Length: 131
Image (cartoon, rainbow, N blue to C red):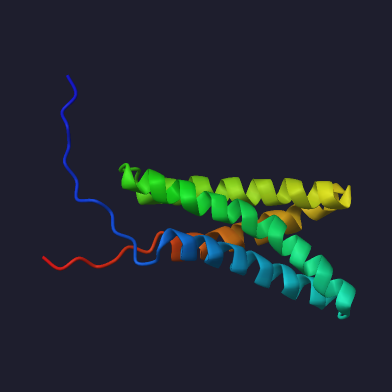
C-alpha cells in the first residue's frame, strides 16, 4: 500500500509568466548575438531573432514542465538533466533542419544547452521560506 507523503508546496521566486519570458528572452539574446556576430547588418538581426526563437521556445516549454514536475516532487538534479538534454537535442534538430545541414547540429546543441541552463536557473529558483 502506498503511503501518502505530505510536502510543503514549492514556492517559486519568479512567477511562471516571467520565467517563460526570461527563457524566451535568453534565447532571443543568444540568437541575436549569434546573428550579429556572423552578419553585422539588419539581416543578421532578423536571422538572430529567428534563431533565438528556435532556442527560446523549447526552453520556455521546459521551464513550464519542470516547474510542474518539481511541484510533484521530482528530484531537482534529475529534472534539470532531463530538461537541459531535451532542449539541447531539440535545438540541435531545429538548427539542422532550418539550415538543411547536419553541420549546424553541434552549434544548436551547445546553444540549446546554454539557453536551457539559464532558463532553468531563473525558472526553478525557489523562494526562501521563513520557519
